[in-house]
Length: 135
Image 1 (spheres, helix red, strand yellow):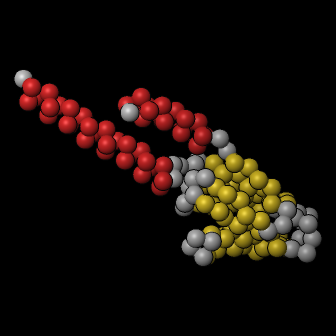
Image 2 (cartoon, helix red, strand yellow; image 1 turned 120 degrees about the vertical axis):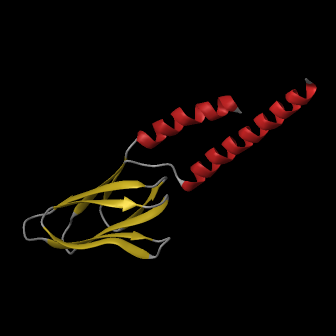
Image 3 (tube, helix red, strand yellow; image 1 turned 60 degrees about the vertical axis):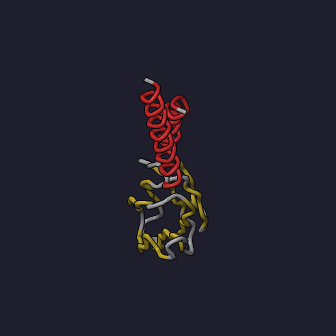
């Protein structure tokens, strides 16, 4: 169990350090495996007006909704793992790039980590108690 616990940390660090990149052509959802920060950027011709929207279906609310003219860059905090919907609403074609950086372990990952740690601590205390009684 100790070996398994020690192996989980480098694997998790490697998985969380890989950025997620998507290009949103029309309103679409992307699946984010953990919480983190999303970098949004879009370019359009000068004078092109459009609306950038990030919707969280779990909380049923828009995290970001901004009317933009021309180019746009911003950061959005993604509070949990799961789907988020990114959309660009305009009459002319605008492409938005989404890159998720600074990802953090999800609640499920943390629950597994703490569960294994708790079980390991209980097993160690039982082993130490039994060894103490033998002497």
